Image 1 (cartoon, helix red, strand yellow):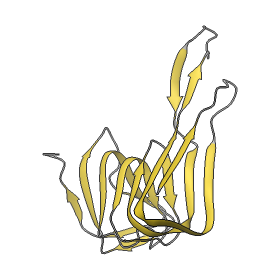
Image 2 (tube, one colour; image 1 turned 90 degrees about the vertical axis):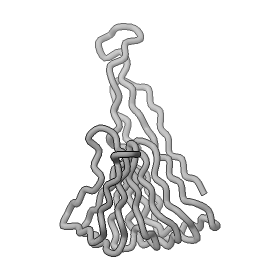
Image 3 (cartoon, rainbow, N blue to C red; image 1 turned 135 degrees about the vertical axis):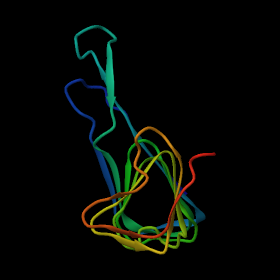
Length: 169
């Protein structure tokens, strides 16, 4: 299964705001990976009245809130520059990959049956809303810039090993 959230807006008087949610129930991935490519970029043009002027990009206000359980999935893969919030128990049998953007685990069982969370490339991983996750390893590969391999918000708790292997990646 593959979920691809992309946004394009062209209006200099507005800010792109794509806050999507899948509410309740179950999302059956039919034995496949659950791949989430969540990308939205707001390009600012003509901000100084010069024709074709390019000013910058803005990736904030672009989220997918997964308030449904992912079932019958192998791995969960997060890619794309925007954020994915896993806010329900999930029932995947494979691991979790944060390759790009921010993957938030906001439920104690948000990572399902994973034994390892892999954070690499342009990926970030965060726990929020007091989620308590134990018995899962965090494997940190080579990450870009000042990305966060593990961020704890709102009294959250990580009770697994942290394996840093970014020297020879």
